[in-house]
Amino acid sequence: MSDAKLAREMLPVNGTGSLTTGWWGMLCLIATEGILFAYLIFSYAYLGIQAPGSWPPGGAPPLRLALPNTILLLASSVVLEIGSRRYRAGRDKSTAPVLVLTAFMGALFVWVQTREWGNKGFGLTDSSYSSIYFTLTGFHLAHVVAGVVALLVLAFWGWQRRLVRGGLHLTLGRLYWHFVDAVWIIVFITIYLVPQQP
Image 1 (spheres, rainbow, N blue to C red):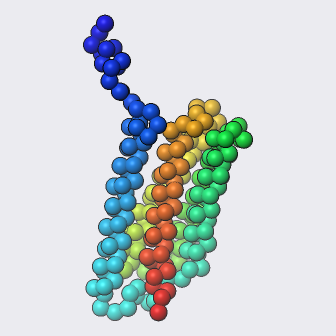
Image 2 (cartoon, helix red, strand yellow; image 1 turned 180 degrees about the horizontal axis):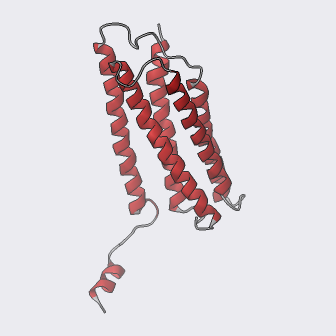
Image 3 (cartoon, rainbow, N blue to C red; image 1 turned 120 degrees about the vertical axis):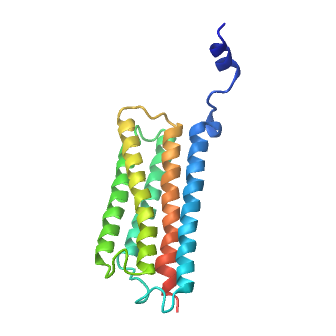
């Protein structure tokens, strides 16, 4: 018997369930990205404390687009979770339509966010507030775009019948999307809700 075959039979090459390298890879990705957002939010708070005038300059940002956009992103998580549970329970033959709907809701979030950026009366380099605002929301937007792409890839695999019911790929996609939504809640509270307080 060759050494390679013996090693495959004796050593765990890839675990199962929560012991797979994919699972741990996603947890490490979420941990590092969570730390990145924690640093950005700390930077926002630090710049606010050090600001000589009011923070944010010009008063609290309006909620006209941000609040409905937040509801949209949270609703996309609910749609994804309900659809995934129905698929795992065997009530739906494919999870692809739910993945496409969730990706569409994410893409709509991106579009509304870019519209909000266009309505701002300041640019990226105008002040410390504008820099941290665009950096924080921009990093989140990049994560939403990555999540939309991942959902579309999963939907394509679903149409090809490559997704296994209860398999790891769908679980990791869901986990990442819920992480992106959870981060937005923190960003939304930090940038939009806290400045609304007197």
